[in-house]
Amino acid sequence: MILFSGGPKTEEMVVVLPSADGQVGSVVVGRGVGRVVLDRPYLASRISSSGIQQTETLTKQSVLQEFRTTLAALPKRPISFVLYFISATDEPINEAKLELNKVLAELRERVVADIVLVGHTDRVGSDEANDILSLMRSERVKSDLVRHGVAAERIRIVGRGERELIVETADEVEEPRNRRVEVFVR
Amino acid sequence: MRTIVCTAALMFAVAAQAADIGQIKSAAGTVHIERVGKLIAAPIGSTVKQSDKLVTGADGTIGVTFLDNSLISAGPNSVLVLERYSYDPTTSAGRFDASLTKGTIAVVSGKMVKQKPESMRIRTPLTVMGVRGTEFVVRVDDSGS
Image 1 (spheres, rainbow over the protein chains, first blue to last red):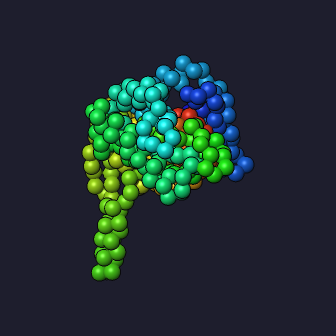
Image 2: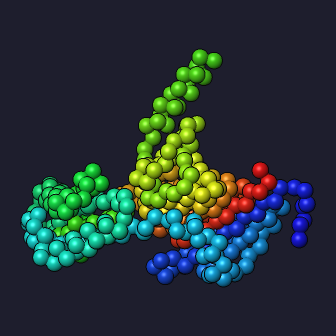
Image 3: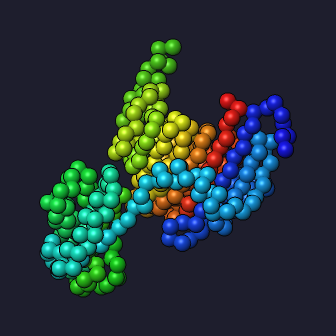
């Protein structure tokens, strides 16, 4: 079915995939009245060189086959971990060791991981003291990672003090779930 | 004329200092970046900047993780331009415009799209895509040029 023989054959295709977390997102293709929303897995829109847009559902196999090389080049999904701390210290609780091992295992899976450590506190203590404590917690995790052979220049540390609580509390209330360092591995 | 030359030189200087917007996490085969008119290598671990053009050869692939956790990979014989990228990690607000001239890409949208649907857009020669999330693939055949 060659509509414009002789002219350059251009065709485009967009296919929505189910995401790793099981959710199906959506992509809006085109502008104005001609726009189409793709919001089911393997729903595809083809656009011919004459601008005609057709929607169809493809099979999983055909999509994975055609885009295999491209999909294989996708970076690993960013992942996060949380380490918890003893009150008013930069000392992780015992269980944090297991979590740190998971972080190290994940780092071994990645060729060039970059790591962001975001420290937090509960609301015990002044804002200023907690800014410092949250940063100390991040630094503590950084030095633990470096001790296990992770390159220091791959690690960025941040202290957020008591600004981002997991559990909202009144001021000066102890809350173990708020005393944490989030580890983002990308 | 002198003014024009000076302005151009200044633009080059600004572009040379442009911020990193992502890191190359995978690269195989023939792949390079066109940055401010220059061809540069694109090894794993190096960074990409706004306005970079990612180019892969017949055996090339590349994968990039951006600041907001958006992921894009390009398959063989692809040309992808990172036209515009801004991201505020505090608010997760941002804007990502890329354009695929030819070839294939796979995309996983990141935090900015979660914060505001369609803040990421992919243009192709024939259409434009507003990304509401999360994963999709695009192919642009370009057998005519």
